[in-house]
Image 1 (cartoon, rainbow, N blue to C red):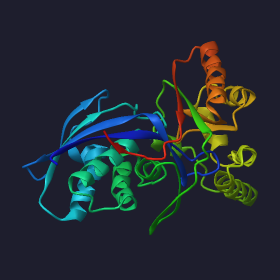
Image 2: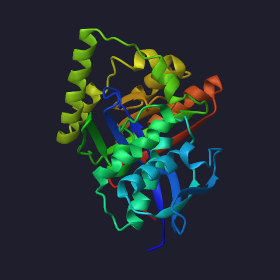
Image 3: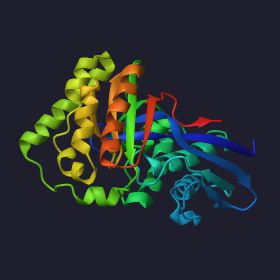
Image 4: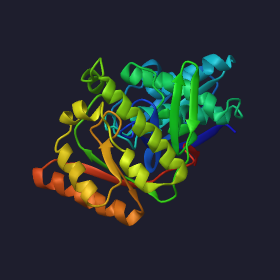
Length: 306
């Protein structure tokens, strides 16, 4: 096989109580990458459709992730990448993660899959390092593995795939402003009170338990962020009203998607997820903020060949 196209989906990271460790994979929004073998060794980005992003390989997240894979692979091979961006950078639903993950999955496929999915995560993380200054794994892990994932450790890398309750649906509302991950990290506090850490740990453990038991009421009680949301929410217009409206419409819980500005809600069932979307849209319609809305099942497959 000389060429392949892959669909790399968006993702939600943190999921309220799981800052930098939890993530989930969305289904119906993402990037498409067209990757082809080249006679010229290395990686070349030939075209980017949909967004203005650098074509220089060393400045592009897909290019950097692909280079990391080739460096480890150790053979003199080359590929070109054409990127169709379906996710806006800075939207909070894993734009850089999708591009990086799609690149390494596609190239791995053309190399006859010398790496497992779990091994590909570390290469995709190098793309994240270029995007925001840190090689975090909470977005790329669910994009590559599918479903919900928990990053237990970065060194050594240890990612656990969690259970996905069948009726769980995500609603995402994206106010059309950009919040850069680096800026969103800058507002975080350097120190925590012990009481905050204990409460957050309890919610994280309970949420993981709720996912495995498919206990929606336990999931509801656990989707509370004591650490990040209180300081980051000021960057998102109408955040508290979005949260209040979504929860009143039946959401299990609502929070900041990644570093924002997107806001996610999890619901039991597609009908409730649509009601939640309408309730959240009313907030931005009232205050005049342009937005996009996505309603998605949880994607258990991750990046797929198309």
